[in-house]
Length: 378
Image (cartoon, rainbow, N blue to C red; front, side, top):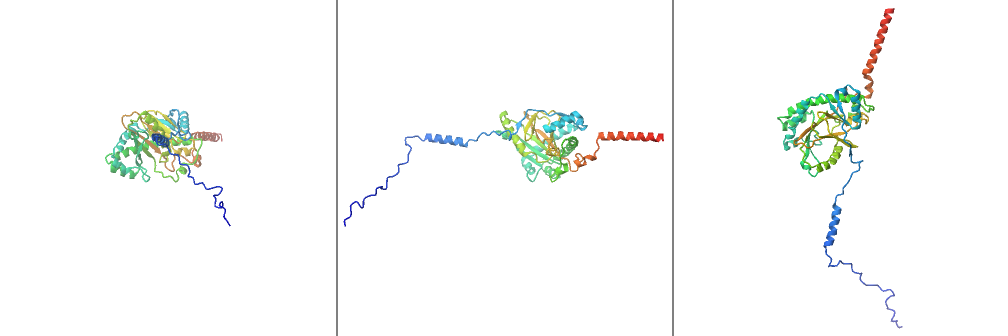
């Protein structure tokens, strides 16, 4: 049997062994400069930090300059209607007011401010031994301001309190002056606490909304008594542009940090400051304080005690155009437990107001005269 020669012929669809088309190759005559320019432009756009603008709900807006009222301490203590209404309105809207005729000796305040400069003249290596930390709540704290020239402007803080441990540590690094300074500070603090106690009593008695008692609020808190923030404001050489850019950072920093100590009222001694800034979560107000006036701001304890009626704010003096360093002090007043300055709602009925005493006196007088009349007739 013969085999057909077509038996071993190729199939109808033969396998295509052709190679794939070559990949496109850039012409060797094209310059690499163009590619480098494209890559450089891409990297510049990718690495460029976007200009973020925080919305108003996140970043507090600066409000129109509004100067808090001047409140005469004697008029406020006697609850004179005009001074009382202005103080209560300012504490609820702005969280602060200016206190005048407070009776604290001006010579004592100026003396303590001058002596406080010695605290910041201590050598940096000695300050390190009394620097604040998580374990140490009193002592030095260095605070740098924000801006391109931040190294040229900074402020130092020293947190003072009637504390034996702090006194021993400071006498070790400043033996020639701390004892005298601490003695004068205690005298000034007693004067401030006396004024603060009377103001807090007036605010509490005239608050339309009362919340918990002071003892309930302070329960479980680490109360060390009233403290004072002594701040050394270094001479500023920042440009106006750098100073303006640092204000936004300053607002955010103040709100995040707040204060390390819970308090009812804060008294700011900042004579000579060009501005005073009042910060809150909803915005901030700046104004030029009056000379010789104490700036009183509301603390967290007063806000809770009033059921949110009084506005908790943070205050900060600003010194501009000064040729020398400036010192300011902020006394954070926290009344002791079982204080008589504030009574709980349950104990309020035990107190008799002046009006009630007058009514009782009139009733007793009428009863006495009736008894005399009855005795004469019979």
